[in-house]
Image (cartoon, rainbow, N blue to C red; front, side, top):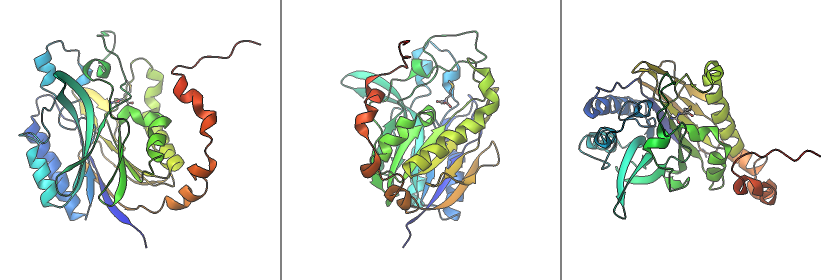
Amino acid sequence: MSRILTVGAAQLGPIQRADGRARVVARMVELIRQAKSHGCDVVAFPELALTTFFPRWFMEDQAEIDSFFERAMPGPETRALFEAASEARIGFQLGFAERTEQGGRIRRFNTAILVDRDGRIAGRYRKIHLPGHAEHEPWRAFQHLEKRYFEVGDLGWGVWRTMGANMGMAICNDRRWPETYRVMGLQDVEMVFIGYNTPRHNPPAPDHDRLSEFHNQLVMQAGAYQNATWIVGIAKCGVEEGCEMIGNSSIIAPTGQVVAQALTQDDELVVARCDLDVGLSYKRSTFNFARHREPQAYRLIVERKGAEPPQET
Ligand code: CDT
């Protein structure tokens, strides 16, 4: 008997700086309504889904920076999203900027949560691979200041048994790193949600620009196959404040095949019926980790951070 989870990747088109939370939440509620009509069990939104991608600007005024962060989840403006989803009996995944107080210290993370069908937060992930830079670099066409505005996530990559599946999350740049997937693969993950905001132009390496969609597919399809898991990639895309971000939100099977993909660079729901047992034959054969992995040979991966070339012989 197969275990089917119907999933909606709720891609969002651009969010401009002047767009308030209420307007964005209304767009998300409309996508939940569409998800309901397609029989979705769970719907996934992008990274930092509630505002424009603010790390593109250098800001020094902390109050201005904090205007992009959520102090409570749900908060006054996001409660409507929780209510719409639980009314529809749909779980969801949401990326947002999290401002939290821990031990008397304010901390800020690029966060994603998994919310079950009853509107309860079942899982939380804080982005670990923060791309970009921490200081103003005016030579760039636009900034990418994630290293300035966020701390490195402190929760690792969890996997939660919820909504009938083993579910995990990663955020945007994490998808380019094989370690991300393998940590979840080792917890028998069956579905990973990855929201992203990926500008087409990469100022330090413009030669990569024309390969943006290819690299997006390459890493997510490889992560799915090598860990025998479904991957749901969800873009915030289109031209946001003059900066183009790629779309191509995709639902990828444990076989590595793309099952469904967005056509637009706008709000669009991508739906697939995902058989959670499709990965089983891979987990039992080629990627039977318990049988075939050789962790003693992988020690360098955790012992060394940067590449060091060999000595000349
Ligand atoms: N949001 C995010 O992580 N974006 C990055 C841009 C990389 S270039 C600084 C990404 O990996 O898509």
